Image 1 (cartoon, one colour):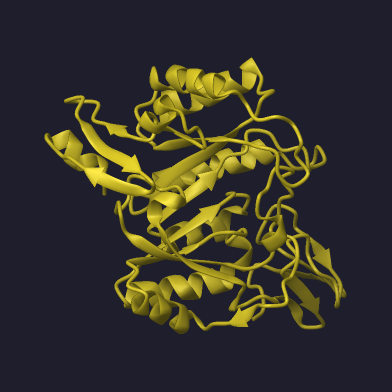
Image 2 (cartoon, rainbow, N blue to C red):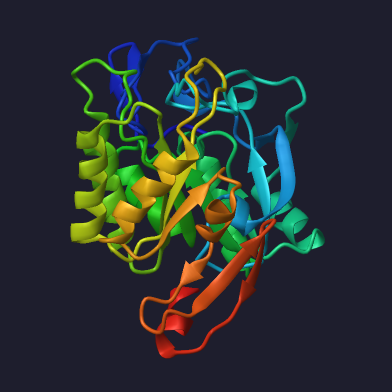
Length: 320
């Protein structure tokens, strides 16, 4: 399947899916590891190839405010257009596995129904680089009455990103805050922030954010997060991810007290701030949803099971 966002440049082709704009000759593979060039153009080598398929609660994505307690068929393969040092999925995303099996978009939809899922979620590796397969699976899900979700880094060019947002019912976007894998020619923060904004502006799409919290996060970085969320998007659910040593990342994790303290600062401006990977009593409470109007505990989350308790009109508007 040829990339519709490619540009032919003599004997080479330029990919237009993500901001790298890889220029490839026949036989070359893009930085994403999954798009390959032939004499006819750039195609998705991994179309329909799945290496991981698991039934998960939607809360694991993490997505808290969309269809709580629903089950999703989580699928993923290899390929990613970022190289985060702390990534826990490099064994999946950065190496083409030997156990990939082919599934058509219809087969994915059917598998979700057989396993009694309410939706399908592209996760484990970056979904946007599998743009064509993503769009096809989304279409089959809608035909079958399933919702479609993705866990994405949001590092995508404007036009394919708009189509991806239209194709999804829900997404969790990883906002890395810092990413040092680029030259000065690529402004990671500007690109991803604009994509976060455009996703939130899509009224048919449910958006939640994940923000990794490092042990050396600067005051300027924290203030930037507070300004962005507090001024523009105080109602967006945000998950603060405690980053632990993984992959190439060997720094010690941030203290529980530090991440909870930062959450308290954010809560002064934003309404729904959650903490992941903190297992103290306060950390567990930081996964619950509080109604900003009646102060009722709308949702209690224990072991990825959500107990819902709606009391007022605002309560009922929080969980979709």
